[in-house]
Length: 91
Image (tube, rainbow, N blue to C red; front, side, top):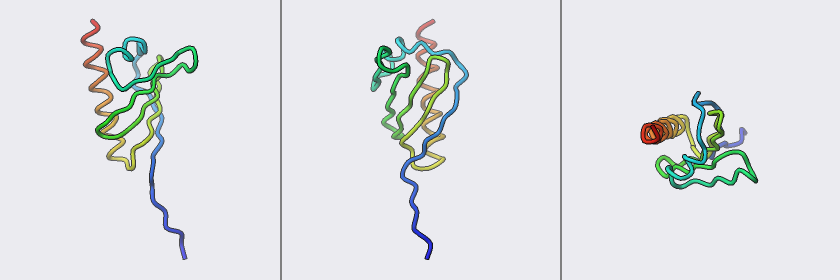
């Protein structure tokens, strides 16, 4: 018998190809944790879809908490929208 396997959590890494001002994002995004003295990445928790991102100033990121590829793609789209909206506000 084959063991029954259920995907509970996908971990993905990538880049949004933008330099990020993590201090500004921490203030503007909400649902963030950023303590650069302890860890260089910003933790950003999306509520819908449920996902947690580690964002770095060079644009690299890690995403955890999604259960399938569709949720992962939706989370990435939402992250991009949120960051673009904040970048427009900053200018």
